[in-house]
Image (tube, rainbow, N blue to C red; front, side, top):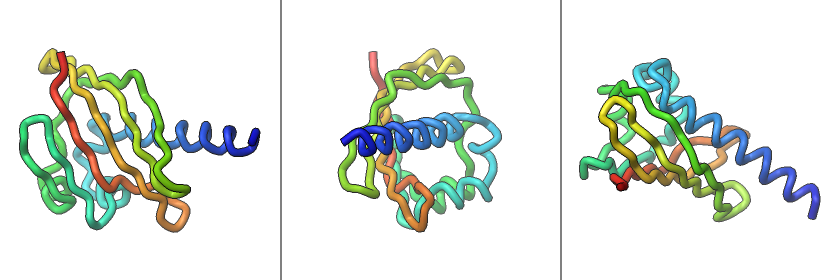
Length: 121
């Protein structure tokens, strides 16, 4: 039981760091890094209502904004599939969003399969 809790905490730390990196300009405009972290079948429901694919994101990059992440939680769905939820404060647009992501582990590497942003009050 103790090892399982420690493993979940380690996964939470890894996924928190990946989500935090995805908010940085260094990753958001880096097609090589986006190709690596997004799974081949990645898709996103954006807070704008737009549906994005991996191809869309890699080709266009992600918008550059000053954002902070809070209230990060992890919800195991399977041994190698995790749902994460958190809040983002977009300081550039003075907007708050609720975020959820599904991460899958493939060959010892976590990849983002699904993401959704919902505008919050």
